[in-house]
Image (cartoon, helix red, strand yellow):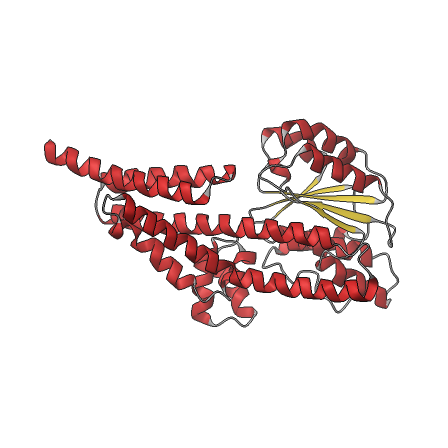
Length: 361
């Protein structure tokens, strides 16, 4: 065992960790990590990859620690991470997975291909992925990540060993933040806002503007006055808050780019992973803004749920229905400003229509 913790980014998930530690010395050809966003499945996939690569080396070999550390950073040449560039896993990305699967390992005797968002695979890419997962070279281990198993994924899932990652509770996320030295009140607020996503909670714990954004979403029902100008103003404020939420992520990305520039200066640009890092940064920004929208819609929903808990209110019922529709439509990557404007206009109009209808009755 090395001095590097393979589960450094994973909170809880004792059963999954136990399964993976036992499997690392003799892994099968494919695993399906099943769990919600932020449950720890991705950092666990990197840790598992590192354990597989380091297990090849003799006990005490210093190279084992290096392999595990680089795998955790997704920088080992035999750990390949593939994730959708858009909302779905497309044919060209399935072909990228196939090419990676057929290549020989660079340094170790095995390579591990981690595929995120496999449950968003497009129908015409399923056959391609199934073939390589079903019959990979002996040196290739696939780790597929999904939040659920839709019907079209059943055949691929049946070729994998499924490892379940339970959804994290707010207290567990909070405890994980406290263990990292986060101040208690900040840990509590970040855990509540993260919705069971520990990766996001870690980011939010460094976000000084979180409390302001929570307050802004909660005051929306009290500011809607039926005018378009108010809706535009609210949307501008919400998007400005989202821009500010990118600050901690952008700071981390700048550090990664600085470290990359230093490596390129020492070792050259070839094989540096510059293209992959740039693409990952873009995906992280897109995911953060979607997470911010989900968090905001959930915060707004709680206001209306509180109203319903106090007394029946048809306006609150209709607002909740509209918010739920907006949340479901996020998977389509809608235009941020237009989606928010449409939602707030509809929520405001529905409230007025119900009040007018009741008065007229």
